Image 1 (spheres, one colour):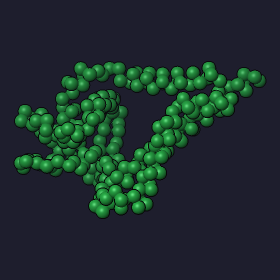
Image 2 (cartoon, helix red, strand yellow):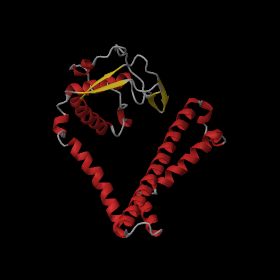
Image 3 (tube, helix red, strand yellow):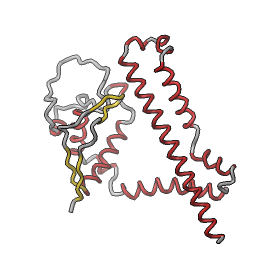
Image 4 (cartoon, helix red, strand yellow):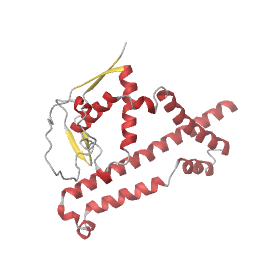
Length: 238
């Protein structure tokens, strides 16, 4: 009876922590989404570029509220949550250590197990896959607005999907603007490209992926997003 009670108690603590984690992550994600929407709406209305006028608007109040949530949750780490449960005598010190060990071990071990057969030397050899990624980002750029000017016209068949264009010697690095260009280029572009190539190399070796973009509808909320769902089919390879 004592063992059953202890197991039930631990399960209850686990579910409580899990639910609290989900609540915190959901609140953080909603607040970030709200901030991005506010930025877009302010940018689209030129009179709101004035700080004084903007400070009088409901949009500014929405921004302040979202920022409060973000700042509060950034300081609300997993360890803080566990310590709160310790103060309520829901968890012992040993159980706190075990929970932290489990969280980090699961994150590291599962990621390492899935991605062990691809390393940085393999990624540099995936030349055509990189060309496919670049062409996809050219047509459906995550950040479609770039505050840059051209000093000369560039001819590009923008409607034709042609990954081979990125394999041509005359196509230099400054033609691809999927992560912006210049001094204000995306700080995470190298990591993003490595992540895309790693995930796609695993996915495409195991599954056949087909898609239909004819009915795809997009919306712009700081970044470009599909508003009509994803028309993608996945079939396991034999």
